[in-house]
Structures are given as structure tokens and as C-alpha cells.
Image (cartoon, rainbow, N blue to C red; front, side, top):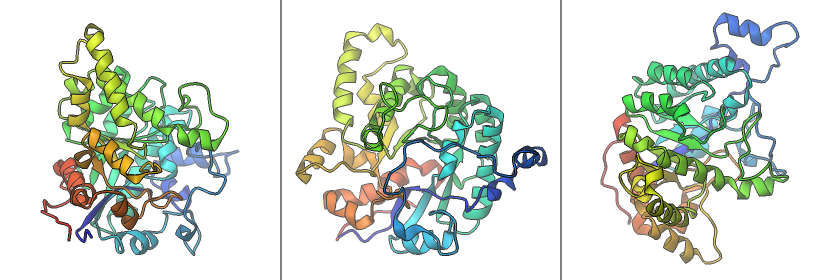
Length: 369
């Protein structure tokens, strides 16, 4: 049994009400939100139209004093940080993930800035184990880069976070490169969180919008596959060789087949992507990491281990609970799904290495007993 410290790379913190974030906006934007006809109810983002019919959060995560799951620091501490021995936890927002679904790019950028200040003051100031994500609005990559440079010197901000696609092209497209340039300046990884759909964003599936939540949730990996192929094909990692990419909540079992096919196509058409100097799979293994939640559930658990071994999953997967969502993964559950010898890396070591520039956790030789 693994008894060492743990790093959780996906904790969805939330505001109890939009007023918490609106208070961090400049007076002019506060007036915009609370102006005539708005009555203080203007949505700051438009969540995905796909909602789990059984609810999106664990039943025991609703704060007794009101507010959505993830909005109570005390509950996060008592349900997650303490019982799971979380030495460092990366906050990844709730409603804030859908910031780019707001049709006004300037308002979206201001929401992201205010949400970042709210995170720093309301959460990071309360617990040194918590680290923030620099939420950016990718609808205007130049404004996003400005926000990264504003917060880049803050060592408590562990990464740059994007989910909803505010422009349309996959995230490797040069339109988004100002974001990656700014992130690379500060050694900040880019975290792409699935699902990447909401409001006015493009479809998160390969075709038109799916009709059912079960379709949407089963196809989440399509978004991740599209963005990864785009990152590599556009030479993002050649242009920004220190940049690292974390795929959050997009599954893991799809990786081997995609890399096999991608390498095959590249060998046939190397002239089409002249920026690349190596096989796509080599860029993936050097620059990309994935979170453990959700682990796929094959009928035979041994099949999952064999699949992970095909792409070096022991060294590439970072533990994440996805707290407080309905499919959040408990520490004990993940520990029983993976080989015991892998646990020190997946539960702690891989994340410590991935976030080393930000000093997320101390180097530690952890062992299983």
C-alpha cells in the first residue's frame, strides 16, 4: 500500500455566487454587469448544454451553508486535502472553465482576470498546499498573453488553463501561439481541460453536436486527440521547446492507437509538416502528460495496464481526483487499478517533476510498502 504524499492535479474550486468574482472587476465592468436591465444576473459564462441527468457532482460535496460543490474551502480540506494526504493540489475552476463561451471577448478576458484574483485572495491565501491555474480567455490570445505575463511571476500559479475553444481552430494553430510564448517565458505548462464545449464554441465531437450526454461524455477524447495532433503538426514544441502540455480529464487509453497512426502518416508525408524534426510520438512523450481521471474501465483490468505500458504510462500519468464531480476518483480506487510499483510516480513523482519549475512539491523519494 502506498502511504506517501499525493499531488492532485484537478480540483474544481467554485465561487458561491458570481458576486464573489464580480467584486474583483474594475468599477466600469461592475457597472456593466449590474447595469440597467441586467439586475446583477448577467451570466459570466455559459456552461455546456450537456448536463449529466443524474447531476454533475457527488451528493456529499454540497456545502451545508449553501453554494455549489467546490465553493467551501473547509469542505475541500476535510473531504480531500486531509484524508488523501494531498501535499499539493492544483485548482482548476468550476464555472470559470467556460469563460470563453461568453460572446464578448473583452468581457471574457476581464472575467478570467477577476477569477484569477479571486483564486489568489480567496483560496491560495488560506492554504499553502493549494496552487492556482492562470485562467485565460483564448478568444483574444494577445489579452491572454498579457494575463499570463501579469501572473507569471507568482510562484503559486502552477499552469495556464484552457478548456472551451473561443476561436474555432484546434489549439495548435498559430492564432494561439502568443499564449504559448508567454507561458514558455515563465516555465508554465499549458493545461487543456476536457470537455471543451460551451456556449458559442465549436462542436466537441468530430461531426455536429451530439444529442445526448452519454454520447458527449463517451466522445470527450476526440477533443484531446484533435488538439494534440494540432500542437504537434503545427510545430508548437519546436517553436517553444520548453513548453509542456497537460491533458486533463480526457482519458488515457486512446494514446497508443493515435500515436501509431500519427507516426505512420508523418512518415508518408513529412514534407507537409516541415517544422517537425522527429516522429510525432517523440514530441508527445517529451512534452505531453495526462491526468489519471478518468481511467477507462475494461472488463479485464489487466487490459488497461497493458495499454498504459504501450506508451509509458507509468511515467506520463499524473494523479487527479476531479473533485467534486460525480465521477471523481478516490485515492484508494486509483491505487487498486494500477500496479503498486507505479504508485509513487503517478500519485506524486510525475507531478512533482512536471511542475518542478513552479516548485509545486519537494523532491522526494517515495516508496510503496
